[in-house]
Image (cartoon, rainbow, N blue to C red; front, top):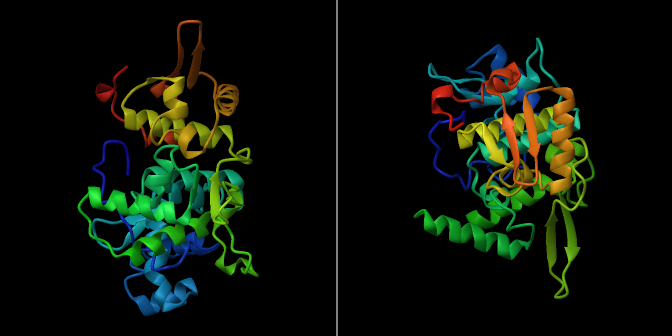
Length: 303
């Protein structure tokens, strides 16, 4: 969703028990670029995408969740925000999703735009930086009850499992056909607690491959949704759905990335660090064209 767009109902299903696999997103984008109605006929879609019939809905779910495709008013699908940015045949940054910073961008988008319940739960704030599967399912149950959804425990268990397998590769996975691109981020670690349970640790490693360009995209997106051109450094690090929280960055890492942005994209961001204030100021007029689609109209800003 772009800045100011109404949020859709939070989703707990739709992935059809499949993680997003390597190759799915570029194949999907190529298919709908050639024919917006490519997925309308399920049997034909299996041939075009080279997948099983039971995977077609899953591919569509992930394509929309990652911003690769979006619904067309006239029916069918068209290239979405990240589809245009990353996979465009003309000037896409990374047409085969081979670069680490592309994966960080996909992670940002699904965590902040897709309204998928488990991503909202874990990457909305830092509360779930250490948890086991039981705690994750309990959190999903509590979340669903609050919004009036009555969901079967099996639905919540599957939703949690898909999420964990999206970031943590199973040892039994012998080849990359069942691997999810997000596994390459190294965001999740497994450990064994004193009671023998497997616990998941999120964001313990340095964010390798997170470039100043992707960090700037996230910052512009965060500022746009806050409708402000000036925010405190603490907002950027600890705010709900902030770059610091979604990427699991500490203050030093955020400061380093801000320096990288100031070097690569002069004047777009200014970090004011004084004894009285630590603020990050965005200059909307200088936002690069590839991120400008995220920004809101000037009259809506709280400057």
